[in-house]
Amino acid sequence: MSDPIPPSPGNLALSRKEDFKAFADAPRRDQPELLTMAALKGLDDGARAAYDRLRRERHANLGPVRTPQLAELHEDLWDIVDSNVQDGDKAKGAVAVDAFPGLGKTTSVLAFLREFHRREIAEEGEWTADGHERWPVCRVGLTGNTGMKDLNRAMLEFFGHPGRARGTTAQFGHRALDCVLSCEVRVLALDDLHFLRWRASSGIQVSNHLKWIANEFPVTLVMIGVGLADKGLFSEGGHGADAALAQTGRRTTRLGMRPFTIDTEAGRREWRQMLLALEQRIVLADKHPGMLADDLSDYLFARSTGHIGSLMTLINRGCQRAVRCGEERLSLDLLDGVKNDEASERARKELHAALETRRLTSRPRRGGTRVA
Ligand SMILES: Nc1ncnc2c1ncn2[C@@H]1O[C@H](COP(=O)(O)OP(=O)(O)O)[C@@H](O)[C@H]1O
Ligand SMILES: [Mg+2]
Image (cartoon, rainbow, N blue to C red; front, top):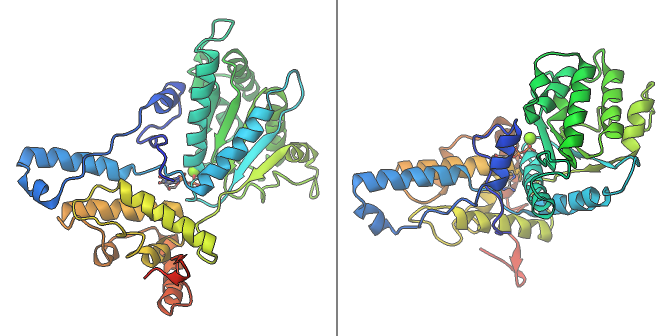
C-alpha cells in the first residue's frame, strides 16, 4: 500500500492544461530526512526553521496512499478506458464515479489521469500526426451552480482556446469538440458534476447535453460526483421523459468509493495497512512503530469513521501541532485537541461509545489473538 505514487496536486487549481501537465510531470515529493530528538535539538535556528518548513509541506501532502479503494478504482478505469479504443463511430462506454464527499474520488481519479497521461505521451509522443499538441486528458472541475454554457466554457478554458470569451452555448460546445478532436483527447473527466444545474428548469437540457458529449466526443467520459444516481444518470427512463439520459445511462458504468470499515477481519486489516503506510510517511522525531496502527487505531477510526478525507485532515493537523509544540509524536491527548470536520465529529460520538464498550474494534487479530 506504500507504493510511490503521484504527489497530490497541492495548490494547483488544475483548470488549465498547463497545470494538469505540471501535475502529471511532477516528480515524487522527497521525504524529508527523519532526525532523532537529539539531532533536532542540535539544529541552529535557521536550519530548524528550514527543516520544519519541509515537514509542514510534507505533512500537508502525505498522500496519495495506494489504498485498496484507489487500486480497485484504477483497475476498473483501466478496463473501461482501454476497452474503449475501438474505431469509428461506435459509442463509447462512460463511467460515473459516484460516492459521498471525502472518500477520495478526486484524488484517486486524478492519480489515474496522471498515469494515463504519462502512458499515452510515452507511447504516442507529444504531438499528433497533424502537428497538434497531444492532450490525452481533458479534466474540468465544476463549481457551484454551473450551467451548460459554463461547462462548455470550462473545457475551452482548459485548452486556453481564444474563443472562450464570447459565444453561445452551442458555439462553445463545438469549439470544445474541435479541441478534443485535434488534441486527440481520450478521456474527458468532469469532476463535481453534481454542481451542474440539473432538474430545475433544465433537466432535459442537461440530459441532452451529456448525451451529446457522450455521442459526439470520441472519449471515455468520466463523470465524478455525489449522488449522481439520484439525479437519474443511470435510470432507464423510468420517471419522466428522460429518454436521452436513459440512453447515456445504459452505457454508463457506475463505480463507487467505499469508506474503511471494521466489521470484518479483512476490513480491519485494510485499516491497519493504511495506518502503517501513514506512519512511515510522517516525519516526527519521536514517532515509533505502532504509533498509529497499534496505539491510536480505534481512536482514529472513531474520529474519522473510516473516511479517508477526515483521517488525512486529522493526521495532517495533528502533525502540524506535534511539530509546533515540540511533542514530535501523535498521541491521544494531542489529537484530542485537534478539530476535525463536522460530519466526522458527529459520527464519532456514536462510534466512540461502541468502541469504548469493546463491542467493536478496529484492530485485526494476529494468529488468533487480538493485537493489544
Ligand atoms: N488515497 C489517498 N491517500 C491519501 N489521502 C487521500 C487519498 N484519497 C483521498 N485523500 C485525502 O482525502 C481528502 C478528500 O479526498 P478527495 O479526493 O477530495 O475526496 P472526494 O473527491 O471524494 O470528496 C483529500 O484531502 C485527500 O488528500
Ligand atoms: Mg472531489
